[in-house]
Image (tube, rainbow, N blue to C red):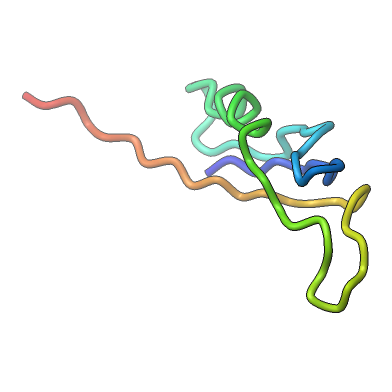
Length: 70
């Protein structure tokens, strides 16, 4: 599991992302998640019509590691 804290940018992209947790560590999962973050898109308006650009977003990313075949 990797958790990124990001900011919602214009157009719904994520910016300024930082890894806040990574488990298990030592597999560069956080770095991989940071490379994926620019591909994510989110809504820029809430259901109530409020702008979300500039808002903080916490993105948990679940990673499944397969064990090598024997």
